[in-house]
Amino acid sequence: MVHKVTNDVNIVVETFYQSAQSKPLNAEYLFAYRITIENLGNVPVKLMRRHWHIIDSNGDVREVEGEGVVGQQPTIAPGENYQYVSSCNLNSDMGKMFGSYTMEDLFTKRMMTVTIPEFQLIAPFKNN
Image 1 (spheres, rainbow, N blue to C red):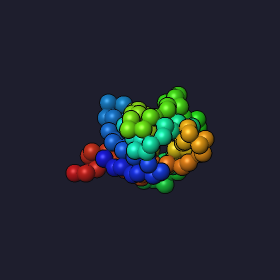
Image 2 (cartoon, helix red, strand yellow; image 1 turned 90 degrees about the vertical axis):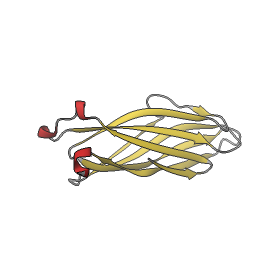
Image 3 (cartoon, rainbow, N blue to C red; image 1 turned 135 degrees about the vertical axis):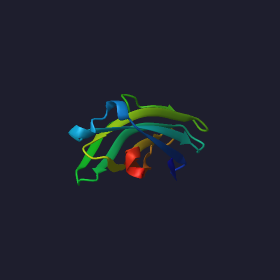
Image 4 (tube, rainbow, N blue to C red; image 1 turned 45 degrees about the vertical axis):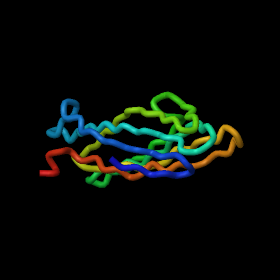
């Protein structure tokens, strides 16, 4: 598990290898990740956009951008959190992801960037 605080927002990431949905013989590896977004500040914030960098160990690099997360643009009140689960497919058994969220301070209407810390995607058999 990794976490990072930016602009009074704490991002916590947990990862899970999905062995039942992976096909190593076909170089298909699926990883799930759970992200908890915690508002440590004094004002409500709204998650507007996401921007991901996905890198696998064979050198493939992808960027993913879009509105919200998992089809939502959640508003997170002070002291509250929002959690979601998503997934990422890789063509190798190791990789990493990192990125950012664009969030809006709902009092000032100011946009701010919140860092998603880099996290590793490693199939468990690579750790042996």
